Amino acid sequence: MRLTLTHTILIAMLIAILFGSISNLYFGDTSFILFFIGLSDAIGRIFLACLQLVVVPLVLVSILNAVINTHAGSSLGVIGFRSIFGYLLTTVFAISIGLLIANIFQPGIGSTLALDIPTVEVAETPNVIDVVVGFFPTNPFRALIDGNMIQVIILALIFGLAIRSIAVKVDTWIRYIDQGNTIMFEIVDRIIRISPIGVFALIFETFATEGFGIFLPLIDYFFIVILALLIHASVTYSLLLMLFGISPIKYFKNMQEPIFFAFSTASSAATIPVTLKALNEKCGIDRAISSFVIPIGATINMDGTAIMQGVAAVFISNLYGIDLVLMDYVMIVFTATLASIGTASVPSAGLIMLTIVLNQVGLPIEGIGLIIGVDRILDMVRTSINISGDGVISCIIAKLDGSFNRDRFLGSN
Ligand code: ASP
Image (tube, rainbow, N blue to C red; front, side, top):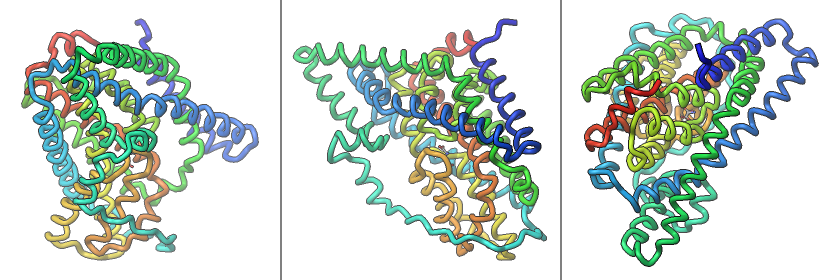
């Protein structure tokens, strides 16, 4: 069997998990292992920097390109509306699954966890009006420098529409934008080619530093979050895809690379370039669609994060012996869905937003101090779910738009 790049990335991940765990268990703080952890940390951060470096210019030029030469049947407004609706809907499903599974298994009931807890600060609850106003950039350079995805999308829309309306006068710009797009995807290609090394470094460092001791008291919470994440991927996403005549098995196969990237980086934003590439080349999604739907999704769609927040709320309520009533659950669904919009697509952001959810239903936010230890690994898994959800909605929108390329979807492997 020929070893594809995807196989190599998978092997790098598995070896990193194995070596990282063995190092942690048996060689903990020997200087030899500490040296390798330091080295992996440096390599991992450089790899991440390469990915992050390309995100903003890639999103900017690919949206410009899409607006200028839009082949999509649906108008951009319809695509935007459908994606936001789809994202919110799947997040509501996600959090409900999280709450349901947590209620069945009741993690933390009768726990002997010592409640000596660090202080945690509550994140500020986003004001919906301010959030919406904040989508509009006042300074194009600041939007790009801050890497504020929604602002970059709006910037690209404004410039793209202007360029399109005076196309004959600015044909040189149009050529540059098109070529800029090609350059960006070439860079992404090259980063993916060296990714087994970067993925190995990121995962080795995580597993070599995360002690196993930390997992044991939280084992029920940890596995219940994982179970709920898997149920959401295999039930909600699969049913949604099947509803639109798309094979879920093939979908997840085509999306392996971004899923592995999300797992190793724990950042939906850093994974955007790889998600865009897989959707276009393997899932047959027109770039005119994915270049909108994916950056919006990476910003507002956090199904995995919402699931973690639901399970964490039940876990913390059990630990403190605080009963949640039906109204609390409704509040959790509502707040976690809104909080997911405000959650930055970077590692651990979901944990910070969990403070809002807990605060809303009167649970002690200090409870977060208890789950922080296992959060990094959970973050890796939930980020994979977050980006899978972005891809599902992109496929559905392409299908509705009539631009879904079934042959490319089925023909790839
Ligand atoms: N790391 C997640 C993401 O980038 C966000 C979170 O749940 O912390 O999608």
